[in-house]
Every structure is written in structure tokens, then in C-alpha cells.
Image 1: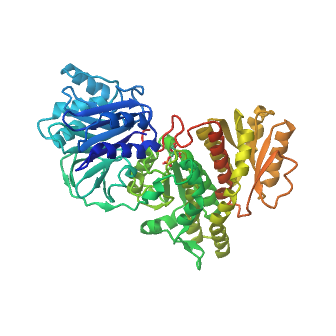
Image 2 (image 1 turned 30 degrees about the horizontal axis):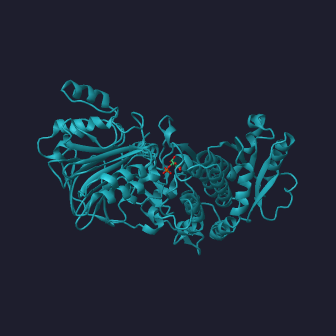
Image 3 (image 1 turned 60 degrees about the vertical axis):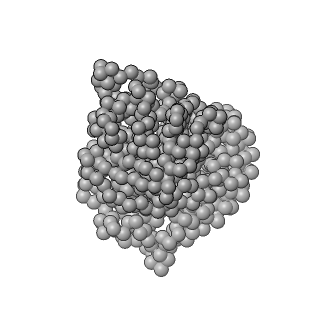
Length: 607
Ligand code: G6P
């Protein structure tokens, strides 16, 4: 979604701001803009790629040492230069960028128009610029504070004023803002990736706080005027992981990073002698957790499919009743959050608005709320009672890949932790651990088949539709495989529980409608084979994923991908990998922008 980067220091701001915008590109955007405070002040905005704005900036921008910049993902008003940020006030003295949605903007705008303000765009953001202008009496931080008190909705903002050339005021409610404090410079951004190469000292702004940045220093007050004293924290961030290296796309790089992602998810988290998991982030709530009877998992997108896997693994390894709910639907359910209910929010970014709203609702109702989050220090990580970081490393490709395998690993560890305190035997616990520890090398084996998957992509990428089927543990993987193909290759794909085939999708099958069947030799193998036969009988093409020693499927299907033998509950960590590769290669062959698919955003911060 939208991205913010701001800089005030002793270096020309333009390069730092453009570089920051490029780091934020992966979050999704349709236009961008920059303001540099100089004499005269410089404002440039453009539709499309950041590279477009960059060309203009290098040609014409001054070397001013403070500025703000923005990538926009349109919500109010189409992507256009006029609607792109920064927005200005009537006197063009104040410049403002904004992430989020101002819910009462029409009412505010009406009042501002009546008092003589003139608007140049269709955005809700411009209202903020005029509102701050109306509240300004010489102190920018106070003006921003007064203006925001009138605002309903969500915001992360950065504001500059010509009267305060080295000052940037930022504020947040529901949309992240992180400060980066160096020796002679201060930065702010909506995502640490835009700060990390300049400083490792960061401050996470909380909701309803307004910060005033000057080179090398900052101060924070709340909207209700309390001053906040908060030190910086060190960022644990590997800058090198932000580059693509020799890979043509981040998505491919991240698919290939999955062996390490699983290793990192497991590192230091297994107690072999007790066949149990050690999850430091849950220790503070361990007593409540081990007594819990009811688990509700909330998440969106790929994280939701990880949650569906979570339902099976928790039900297998523990005696808990488990529900997995789309975070966006959570609020519409009349949930009986009885004592002993645990709500687990799963999120790569830790900023997804629906997941955040769901966890806040669960907290309000008294549930113990846990997080399974990748981005350290993100809002969901901070607002949950306790949690586990997935440690997958920064994920830049818009479509989640390595975060998903990390999430599956940690869900298994969490279920193991609870299961071993109940009736899961030492032997059963050990079997799971042994299987998990083999996964990194087994993924490496699967990745060696990348060329084979590419050939399959050449054969299948022109299909208009695709069906993915699986049962039990492989059902969420069928859904995830279909989602990947939709997101990356823009091929219409449906994921289905194989048993549901005959209740609808089989009507679609014909020689031009291929099916990918997840047909592992587990408890549901024979039934999946029956589904394959039903598809064959209707002349549908079938591509199957099965286990290495299975020689029986060859004459039933058109194409095969083999994965190594493993425990049934751990197999999803393997089967998802060829499905990610298939989507990736189909996307590349069809000329799609695989790292930044159209209309999608990495971090969805609006509900
Ligand atoms: C967006 C991304 C998906 C992601 C989903 C949930 O739609 O494009 O890849 O799965 O958000 O994001 P989260 O950060 O909460 O896991």
C-alpha cells in the first residue's frame, strides 16, 4: 500500500528519498511524489513507476537537505498527478504525505470550503493539509496535533512547513510510522526497509502520537498532549537480504531461501530430550496457553491458508477445538470467546488492517491474543499479548512464499508445545521433530527440479483456468497453489477440497481445463486417486504432485512432480514449493510483473 519516507539532515535529500521510495515499491503503488525544501521549494509528482519520478528528480531537483516523499495506492480519487502526494495548503507553505483513510473527510472538507479553502485534488489527504493550515499559529507540531484531533480514520503522516526548514512532523493512528535517528540526520518511514541503510537506531511511533524530527534528534507528544519519553531500539536487519543478488526476481530468490527460512524458524526452538518446542516469546503466557481449550486463528491471504493448515495440525497434536477465520470476517461472527480461548493472529507484515482489527476485537473481549509475525516491531507484534517471530527475513516479493513455509513450521512447533503438555506421546513428538528437521534439505532437493517445473509451466501457462485439489493437510496447499497462480500469472485458478469436486467444479472439466492434484501416499491417497480418475474420464489434463517412491500414478496423469517422503503433517512444507515455482514460471513466461503483480500490495493497511 502507500509508503512514506522523510529525511532531515546534512546530505542532499533527493537521493535518500528516491532510494527510500524504491525500497517501498514492493508494498504496491500507482503514483509517487516528492517535496524538497530549498529555495525555491521543489515539488514533483508522477503517475506510474518510481523510475518515472526519479528521472524528473535527477533532472531538476535541488540539493536541499530535508524533504518528504510518498508512493500512493489509490483509495479516494484515481491515480493522477493531482491526486499524488505531497499535498499542499492554500498558501503552498505546507506539504503533507499520508497513508490511511480519513473517514470524515467530506464533512471536514465542506467546513474548510465554507471558510475559504480551495482544493486541487479529489483525495481525502488534501483535507489534512488544509486542516493543519487552519490550525497553524507558528508551531507545526501543535498545529498537526490540533488538526488530528478533528480527524476520524487512520493515518500515518509526514508534514513540512517552509517556516521550519529542518523540521518534519510525523504522526500515526493505525498506519505505521518508524523514526530512524542518526548522528546528524533523522528519518521517518512507513516501513523499516526505507531506513535500514541509513541507521540502525529506530523508534516505533505508537497510535495517537505526534513526533517532531530535527537532524539527529526527535521529541514525541500524544494527541492529548502528554509528552512521551522513548529511547531508540537497535534494528536487527540484514541489509544484504534486501538485494536480489543473482536472481532475476525477488520471488524466485525468496522461494530459494526457504531451506534457510525453515532452519531459522527451527533454530534454538526444539528440545530433543523432551520432544517438545521451546518458544521464548510464549513463556510469559505459557500457563494460560497450556490450559487453553479453544483456538481461533485469524489472518488474511496466504497467512489465512497457513491458518487453515494450523487447524489440522493443532487438532492432530492437541485436544483443542480450532477455528480458522478470515480476519476481515471475524467482526461479523458472534463468537463465544469463553474463558480459555486463545486467538492467534498470523501475519507476515504485522500491519494488515483486517488482522489488526480482529486482534483488537479479540482483546476487547478478553481473549489471550498471540501473534505469529515476520516483521519485528510491527504493529501486530506489539499489540498482541505474546507471540513468535517467524524469522523468515525480509520478504520483498508481493506474494508471500518463504513466510508461508516459516508460518507452517512455527504452527507445528506451537502445536507440539501444547500437545506435549497433554496426551501427545514422546515418540509422536519426536517423529514430528525428525520430519521437520529434514525439511530444509528436502526443499533443496525439490528446488533442483526447478527446470522441470519451468517446462511444465511452458506446457500449462496458456490455460485460461486451473483447478488445484487436495485433501486434509493438502487442502490448504491446493488453496495456496491456486492463489499463487492467480496473483502471479493472472490465470483464473480455484483451490478445492478434492472431495468437493463432484459438487460443482467437475462440471467445468474439459480438455482445456487442467487440474493440479496433490496426491501423496497418505491416508487420503486412494480417495484423491478416485478424483483423478473422475477428471480423466472427462478428458481433463492432470498434473500431480506425489511422493518419490510412488510408481503407480504415471499412467493415470499427464505430468508428475515428485517430492521426498515425509510425515503427512509436514508434507505441506514440501508440496507448496513446486506450486510456488509453477506460478512463478507461468508468470514469467506470460510476461507478468511477478514481484509487483498488478493491483496488489505487500502490506494491506486499509480494511
Ligand atoms: C497481501 C499480500 C499477500 C499476503 C496478505 C496478508 O494480500 O499480497 O501475500 O498473504 O496480504 O498479509 P500479511 O502480511 O498479514 O501476512
